[in-house]
Image (cartoon, rainbow, N blue to C red; front, side, top):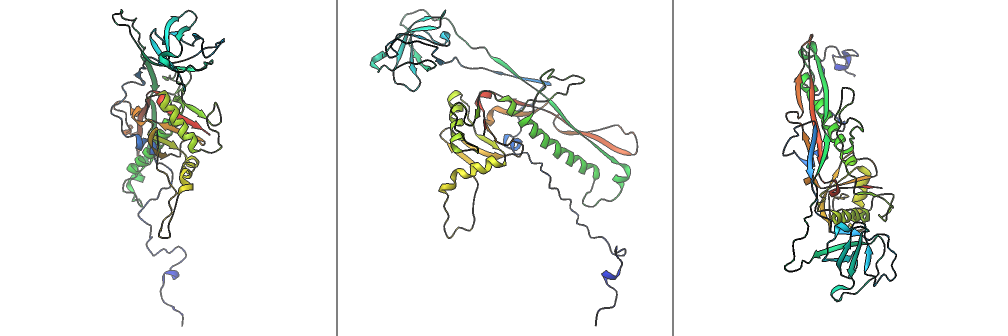
Length: 382
């Protein structure tokens, strides 16, 4: 005999007499993580102006290229044109890159960038010289009792970036504040948290991809001031797959990563310790060890992840960020990068004047990127 008494299903379509059962939890699935900012950590200092500057210096060069030479005998000629004779001094021992011959500079003609050299110095084996060959200075030998050489020095350079204001407005009516919310104790605080998450997401995106205006980058009443990001700041070490001898490949390969690290190491004292990639490039890095991955019958988990890449040129943590453009890999020395707030302008809530039955305010923050020695970092594009 079917049940004929009072039941929940007999209370009407909308169940008017039964209390609602709503979970006291608000679930959010929108991407808002900031893995690069987390990896870089908090800066040691704040910016003091909307135009943020820092000083960089270099050592005197110890390498120059041979110029456009026409050698009668490239293995014995004692006169060689170079791209910049001021790099050299009389008494320098020089060696062609990749060669074993040592030569001694005995005279310099700065007017036509020509060196007079002793070939096969110290019994070394003479080798053919060619145009556009790098010549590396081993060191200079001074004559005993000789007068001091003319002083040489490098000029320090001032680098610049600009602060960018990140803001979001929060506004909640008095009635909304008064009613009981499901899963939210204070609607105004909840809105603050949501907008702050969005601004942190935007900050990471701007740190990676942001560009400063071509004109009036300091900003005007009509020009918005924006920071220059990492991608736009790196100029020296930009490696295009298959271009200028860089390994080709439609997807990222270990040969490309290793060669880029080698070239950065060769040209700078930077220590690349972060490799920042998007999803497809992270999967490509995981495949670096796919051929040598082994599992036993006792293995109860399958791992397909590389979180650290260790090479002869550094140990690099792999950072997955959804904001890195597709086909791009950032090779960064984190000790030379700071994401800095303008002093007193890290993200905070600023109440606005009460103009009615509502509470309103702004989430504000002003930040800039200090990327020192851009030649210590690199970008691979596949």
